[in-house]
Image (cartoon, rainbow, N blue to C red; front, side, top):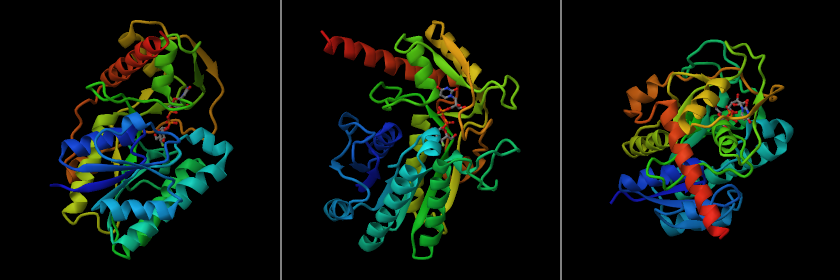
Length: 334
Ligand code: UFG
């Protein structure tokens, strides 16, 4: 029996895929989530504890009841653009909540943590692809909260905490078996918004900036399938359980190739067979023009292998999930 793993934010988009992957590897994911951005229906592979990260009493009770051997920490606010408008929301929840979690872990003697970090820790980098030695220079408060949390983990390493920070590039797609998918409220991410525009659920997609220093003037991102991302968490948990993660490790998770906003829209048109109405707008504050990963360290050290690296496969899985959601909603409406 591989044991319990506490997954904060396990009812969310990435967290739910992580839980499914953990369960497939024999672990029992115990979800700790306040359901502010997640859904009860995403919790299918273990118990759900509804609670706020900052509620140390509740968190402590979850540790006492379930005795997890490790924690996967995904709970946090995620919208880089919003963090520029409302930094206090991000510094408050993402940092104060994480400190509360680290304190409870220390009190309960749990010394293994996988942290959901982000490519946003790098900010505006000139050299592509980005490896883990690139300077940590976030360009928005969201990125700062991820970088500061990684600093916490280095500091707690002196008290014996072993950790793996996974710096996600752009999570995309949906569970290939159709059980899970992306549903943020409000949605801010490019691929689901493009697909909703293709489906006629919104009038158009706004392109944020056509004057970036990129070949077609739109931002370039490295899209990675959410199930591949989830697999990396299982490998990280296994690494920690085998005694790894000393001194706080960090890994980039991306494909190593980038697509512009226009290329994503064109790929979505091919996958859906529909035209996506668009409007060219100004830049979104805090958006780096280009983010492409060098995932070599994760491949070498974690043994990570991607199964769905093609952008069109990622979009096809997201499209299948959206169509299923639309059918479900129209059935429910009678
Ligand atoms: N974009 C648009 N129109 C939209 C939405 C997005 O043009 O309506 C553009 C953005 O400007 C950006 C690209 O599409 O250039 C991707 O935007 P997303 O909002 O989908 O993703 P971000 O790159 O801003 O951020 C995501 C995650 C972060 C993570 C980051 C790391 O949300 O948590 O990837 O690369 F830090």
